Amino acid sequence: LAADKKEKVEGSFDVDLPGAEIGKVCTRFPPEPSGYLHIGHAKAALLNQYFAQKYQGRLIIRFDDTNPSKEKDEYIESILLDLETLGVKGDAITYTSDYFPQLMEMAEKLIQEDKAYVDDTDREQMQKERGDRIESKCRNQSVAENMALWKEMVDGTERGKQCCVRGKLDMSSDNATLRDPVYYRCNPAPHHRVGTKYKVYPTYDFACPYVDSIEGVTHALRSSEYHDRNEQYYRVLKDMQVRPVHIWDFSRLNFVYTLLSKRKLQWFVDTGRVEGWDDPRFPTVQGIKRRGLTVEALKQFILSQGASKNLNLMEWDKLWTINKKLIDPICPRHTAVFTDGKVILNLSNGPDEPFVRVIARHKKFDGAGKKATTFTKRVWLDQVDGAAVSEGEEVTLMDWGNAIIHKVEKDENGVVVGLSGALHLEGSVKSTKLKLTWLPETDELLPLTLVDLDYLITKKKLEEDDDFVSVLNPNTRSETLALGDSNLRNVKRGEILQLERKGYYICETPLIRSTRPIVLISIPDGRQRPP
Ligand code: ATP
Ligand code: MG
Ligand code: MG
Image 1: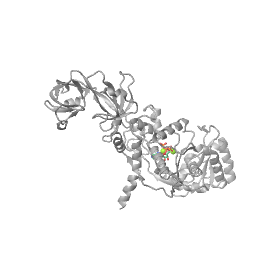
Image 2: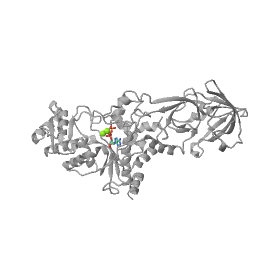
Image 3: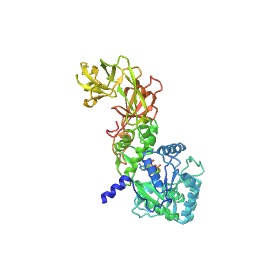
Image 4: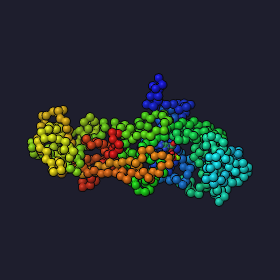
C-alpha cells in the first residue's frame, strides 16, 4: 500500500499544500531580474502556477529586485517573454522595490524594538564570528547608537557604508541561518527602477518574508536548497509581527552536464562562447525552445517529478523522450541525403521523364500537410545505404516501392561509387530487409546544413567548488552538409520536422536564397546522448 501511495504522488502529482483552501491560496514566482530564466526557474514558475490553479487561487509574478549591482530592465523584459513562452500568466506583476519605503520602516521598527542592530564588523570577520558562534561587538549597542548609525547608512555616508543591519536572532543556534543574518546593506549603485533614491537595500532574507506576507501570499514555494532558511523565515515574520506564510519545499532541478546558474551562463554570453541567452546549447527557456523542446514536454516532465524532494540529477534523455512522444505524431516528414559520399542508383526501368506525386507529409496526421515528390530514373542514396546492399538483393525505396540491385560498384578503397538496378514495384515491401531513403536526381534539391550540438561542459555532475571553466567542452557544435527534398523550401524558422531515418530537426535558418543552405538543428530523441 505504501508503495502504491508513493507511486500516485510521484506520478500524477496529486499533492496538497498544507492548510490550502479552495479560492484562498496565493503563490508567487519571484525571479531576480539578473538573467534569463533557465529550466530550473521554469520548474519553479510552473509549480507555482500549478498550485494557484489547483486551488483556484492567485499567482503573483514578483521581480525580486533588491540588488542594484546585478539587475537590469532588459532582464525584466526577457523574463516576461520567458514566462509567456512557458504559458505562465500571473494575476499580478509586482516588484520588491515597490516596497522599499515599507521595508525601511520595518527595519527601523525592528531597530527601535531592539530586534535588530547596526554592525560595522567587516565581512570576513563577520563570517568567521558567525561560524564560531561569537557575538558581534555591536550586538549590545543601545537603540540610540543603532539609530544613529542607521541614519548614516540611509544617508550613504562614509561611516554608514561600513555598516549593515543585522537581525538579533540567535547566535548560539545550531542552524547557522539564525545567527544574526544581514537585513540591510549599503550599495551606492543606482537601481534600475528607483534610480539613486536609496543608498541602502534589503537582503533577500529580510525582504522576501515581509513582501510575501504583505502581498497576501499564503504558500511560499522554495527550492530545497533554502530548506535550512525556513526557520529563519518564520522567525523574521514573527519579529516583524506580520501575517504568517506557509513554506513548501520542492526539489531543485539539476541536469547532467549542465550549468544552471545565471552567473555562470552570463560568463558564456560575455565571452562569446554562445550566441546569446537563447543559444540552443543553453538550458534557458529560450535556448531549449530553439533546440526543439516543446513547452508541453517541459510541463509534463516537471509535473511527472511530482513532489519528490530528492535532490537528484536529471538526465536530459528523459525529457527528450517525452518530447519525442509529443512531436513524432505530428511533425512532417522530409528526406535528405548526406552530401559526402552520396551515390547514384540508376534504375534501368525507371521513368524516362520525371513525374510528380503529391503525398502526405505525415502518413497518420493530415494536419502536417502535403508534399510533392519527384520520381526519377536516377536517384541519390546515402553512402552507408549504398554500402549495405548486396548485388541481387531486393530493397525498398521509401514511398515508392521495391527495386532489385544488380550491381554495386566500389573504388579501390571499398567506397561505393555507383549502383544499378531495376524497379520491382510488384514486390512486397514486407519482404525486404533494407528500406532506403532516396532523393530524385533533379536540380531542385536544396542544400542543408545539419547541426549537431553538444553539452557545454564535460563533467557530468559539477560540484559546488568545481571550476566550470576547467571543464569546458572545446567542441559543442558540428555541421554536416546534406541535400534535402525541394519541399523543404517552405519550412519556417522554429518548425520541427523529421528527416526520414535521420532524426528530428528544428529549422534554425529557413531558405533565404537557393544558394544558401537551410540550417536544421538536430533535436535529441532520448535514445542517444544529445549528439
Ligand atoms: P541563479 O543561481 O541561476 O541566479 P536564483 O535561484 O538565484 O538562480 P532567482 O531568480 O532568485 O534565481 O530564482 C527564482 C526562483 O527560481 C526561486 O524561487 C528559486 O528557488 C527558483 N530556482 C532557481 N533555480 C532553480 C532550480 N535549479 N530548480 C528549481 N528552482 C529553481
Ligand atoms: Mg536569487
Ligand atoms: Mg542560485
